[in-house]
Length: 139
Length: 139
Length: 139
Image: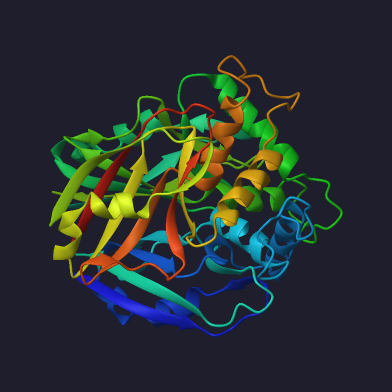
């Protein structure tokens, strides 16, 4: 059984955002799978997908703090600066975190840990809407 | 053919640990697959899975050295500090390295490079046992 | 439908290189898939695969600049130095970026964003040829 679906996320401010509910809500077919996998892919190079702590909003703020310092906007070595100071750091962050997630499915739902949630990493100041391709398969 | 299995790893000290043998040993069904994939997922947000050099233990020590400096415990900007100084850095390391691995399967075994081994990244001082979901599928 | 194929990439200088065309060209079976996924796996621990901007070569140069500074060759804490100053940083970079990519397939082609291309991260000074395992499955 294969399901392929588009999901468009509304624009969000720069930072890390929990999108687990939105993803699961877009996939009623999840309930029909006993065993399988869900692949999420973001069609952009300045935003990312990762899994992390779904409870404390401070964790998401701290992610933004760390990544902002680790990949600075004002580094003297950036050459690709035409699209704004936030653009090249956004590309590096996107590759550090990744464009895709593959998640286990069991008994009609995502088999995640109690504290695991899906984060959208929005690395641009004004990234606009973000498009995802969701692929679900299993039996 | 689908196989879904739990694997609980005994507590390990903070650092990077080779778990290839333990993973393969938990999956006798691997031998039945001509072509397929294995997905490993860790159900925690302060530990990670990655692939790296399986020979020299120094590589794993150097990983810990680099990650300890890149994501420092005493950064003044951390807000999420209630669970201990090692907690927030553990979350960032988990997302830098990732919670999942997808590995190719061929002729009844993992199709890895000669020097590739599966690392558990234990990023807490006392992380306790760690739970994995293993999903194997193919033909 | 399953396809498993080897792809050997010619030696490339240290840095980031676009390999999308080479990967797609090695997989005529892509055209037969309505919905599916492609998994790319690199059989080495000092090179990586990631997705990023496919237009400006400056982005790839900036990637090399950032990673070279983030994971320095001359760090006093490296123990694994026998294989050269570029070796241990290459291992860390390989795990930061990852050894695998899973990409959505739709209507006979990769379902990537307009600006997404597949990067080979060559992290050694003389990495030599690099071997990939490509696994394609779907319906």
